[in-house]
Image (cartoon, rainbow, N blue to C red):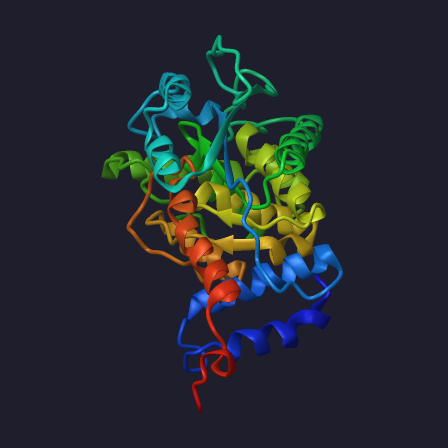
Length: 342
């Protein structure tokens, strides 16, 4: 857990800036959180917030439940989108370029492997894809544990290379079904509340998706996070869980993206509650279950842009707000410095 002994001094610094108390709203909360994290790292009050090499890691994995028609797209699209990421043609690539964010892509277990070698493409396959969660456990407990270990590994490698602001994105046809099942499994909420329309499915597909996720969730009664991830998780989701855990252990903040990324974040907090201290929630997705997940995490997202894409896009779009929070903390004059009397 973060040492809160620096908190009052950080708030004093923020409150002495040339503005009314609280006038910068959530940016003040972000600045406080970042300064508190970096004060803990240094062992002394952080007089400045540094942002180095912000990086999004996009985890890709396929899901057996995709065969049930729960998405508008087949599983083959996962591989096609991984190729698109590598080629620089996806939305997240565009936003990374415009916001000076580095990007890595991880094959966690897509149905059709990609033949490509580069430092920004990492192969950490747990299998070809998960089993159909509506009919059987998505993966073994051993795969869950291996996935968490591999997620920790890629997260640590990026941090060790100099990144101090992480983002995690995902790609995997069928993964909103998995995220909805995780939400229902970990909270006991009704499946009907947790399931959304994902990429924009029809009413008939939506009813079928509810039925299939219900079948998966009804198969177990536990809220043990490892059991839930084994029963209804995804290869990309368990690796994201490990990545969040490593970020917390390395005292590195993470900008949390949408529904699937938040399902992994929520799962990580069930393993280590201290992870929550390092999470900044980028946006409110239009996937219905995301609102409930944010409530469970007592999270107030920075943006609501009606996004429902994934890939880490919402997190990358929030990076300018993080930089703005750091800049006002670092450079905005105090009343004394500016000669302003209040």
